[in-house]
Length: 345
Ligand code: MRU
Image (tube, rainbow, N blue to C red; front, side, top):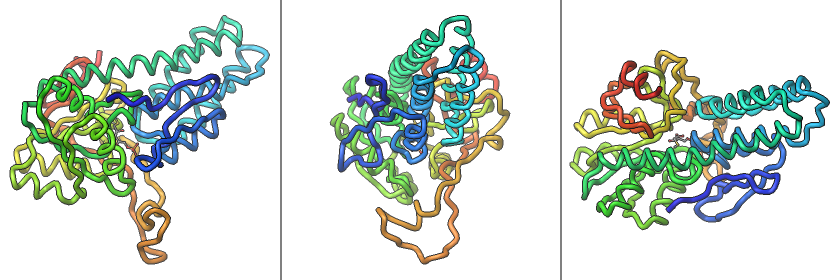
């Protein structure tokens, strides 16, 4: 069941505040570039494609009140807005991809009036949203071919409608298989420390009437050993040109476990998640987040004061652990540089 994560609503960005789910379903409105930056940074909107959309709409919000006298002044401010939004989160390449599209759109219309450029920017952001809806459905269709009736799937973090415009990548595959009438069951990792799996993935799957069971992250290995998992499907925040994939911390451990138990490990992601400028996962910037995300649980301190904390938001899974990458253009089995280049164009 698609959930509309983020959209343009009469001069403001309307989004579901994902930090409140599943206990509260509440929309917030961002009408300044600072407020959308805060929403991205604090995971009110999160997931690579959704962050890209938030960035594109952030440019619209940041430019809509511009009183620039001419293109040069407008462009200067646009670059400031883009650079500010770029600083919100570093890992998901979809953010930089979307901001780049907004920059190109502005340049392309440099000969038009400032008001017309503003409406072109809004059109571009809306186009990114509409494209994402189609892309995710195609990822779903392509990926569902890999899912058999009766399969039990393990997923990590949330790569669902909430992480995209409305349908999801990894969950898009699950939704599509379900729509085809395949009887599937899902295990959702809770996904420490911010519990995107426990809070968001379970909520989305339950809304769609899909059989889902919540587990702690450290239970995945024993389920695999007991033969209870047929495949793993996760999303991605950035895929290097050789197939190395950054995704939510804990993904790498799952990939290693899947390999050890001979279970297919799938990554579902749009082409916009590929970063063809980088050679390998070593070049992916990994976001380090605040220690309080680990030392505190719902506002209550659980760890000793002054404890050292290591809190990376993502890890990188080398391509050799990935059975296939599912994209809107098709499935790349045993991904490598050559196959990725071919599908990416
Ligand atoms: O920190 P988050 O919640 O933004 O991390 C999200 C993930 O790791 C997702 O798996 C990824 O962005 C893919 S979303 C389709």
